[in-house]
Length: 140
Image (cartoon, rainbow, N blue to C red):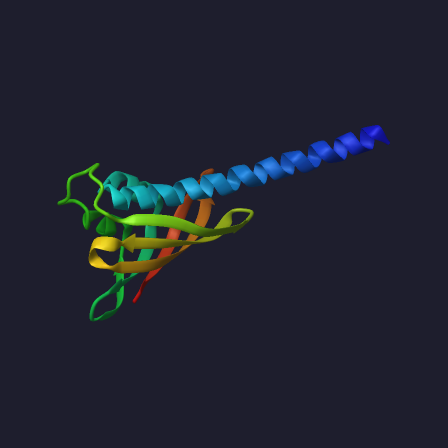
C-alpha cells in the first residue's frame, strides 16, 4: 500500500511540475512580447511570434488593422532600444492543452490614457511556444 501511495504521489507531482513548466514557458513567450514592446526591442518582439502570424489591431478610424510580426516590431524602430517607453503589460490569463494555448493581457499606456486588451493564440512549434495570432482592442 505504501508503494502504491508513493508511486501515485510521484506521478501526480511530475504531472504538476510538467504543467507548471509549460505554463511558465507560455508566459515567457508572452513576456518577451510585452518587454520587447515596452523597451523598443524589435528582436525580442519578433522572437515571441511565429513568422507567419497575423496581428489584428485597433487603430483610430480603421475597423481592422492587420500587421505581420515584422511590421509590428517596426513600429518601435525609431525609438531608443532598451529605454522604457511607458507601456505597461500584464498577463491576465493563460489556458493550454497539449500544444495549443490562449492567453489574455492588459496593456496600459498611462501618458496617453490608453488601455488595450490583447488576446493571443499560441502553438508549441519545434519545442518552443510561439504566438500564432493576436487580436487587440482599445478599452475607453
